[in-house]
Image 1 (cartoon, rainbow, N blue to C red):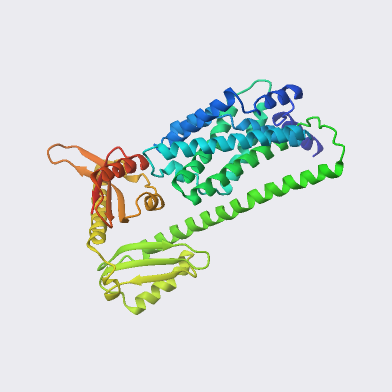
Image 2: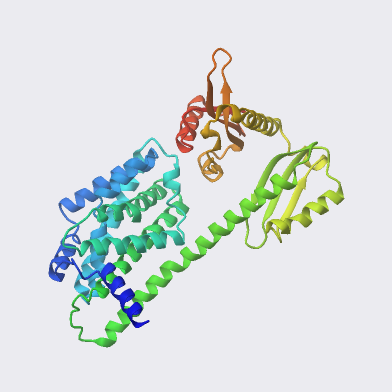
Length: 440
């Protein structure tokens, strides 16, 4: 038994040893210190990176955003702060905080300026993704920071640092904060700044942990009581940063589970021959969620409605309020656009299912994203929409083409230019080779 324990211990020590191939402490510290200062070339590089990231967010280009993150020097002062805390070098901590503050302010000013003068003011999906931080962002920042400081302490530098810059994504949140200022959207600004704060704090914490694990030499600290006080402040900052993200992550997961269960309930339980679900709205709320359905056709009887309510608990929807509007109650809610959209969606789905065995098109099986949150922001006048993959069989040839079909209903007519912009955005967002947009 002792031999097995020794073998396992030796195996772990050999495979996970960070002390082997590590750079001299003095060289690592000097290398990190060089990148803390923001002046001259570093500052200009930061400004250029900010403008590149802003353009990427503006045109919804992931490749451009990645390029901006690769050339951004923001990791320098954050790792400097973590190193300073880990070695009791509070002059380095102050220098890192000062330079990080300067870099942050300049970045927000530059991005605000860009989004003020750009003719494109729509919030694209890449930008919207930076407005709702969650627990996953904490994990990404912490793990990315660990990888970054481990790579920085090696004799041979690898391609880890560029990967860390992409994973932790410090640049896009700052640009999103600038967008929030330029457009007067406080929600965007606060969400993006919080995401930036999460990334910065946990990269710093990761640096501190590795520095202590590698036993970097600590500077003598005359006042031990003050040293403990500083350590407590650091712990408080970490906990206060992580706490809201845990709550947001719980809300995101809980909402996703509710919407999936609600969609499954509607699909399986409201499958009547002479009754059609015209619209469905799932309203998530911690105190009590709602499923709001609008029906067309034969009215459901009271026993059927009672049965539906009793079936909710079978889909983990206990406590959910089921609102069904039908007959006279639905008369004022039903409009021609909703009926057209519902019928067209069913027709296209039926065509796709009928054609699938004969064509073998894999595109029909591709999942389509939920665009509702983004479309509500981009097009407030949008009342309803449907989206599906379908097949068009050509009568003049034997060809059959896959196409994504979108039917949208607006409260008021929209210009041709806006229609074309919406079509291009949808095509890019769902990554469709061909897309047809029908405006009701």
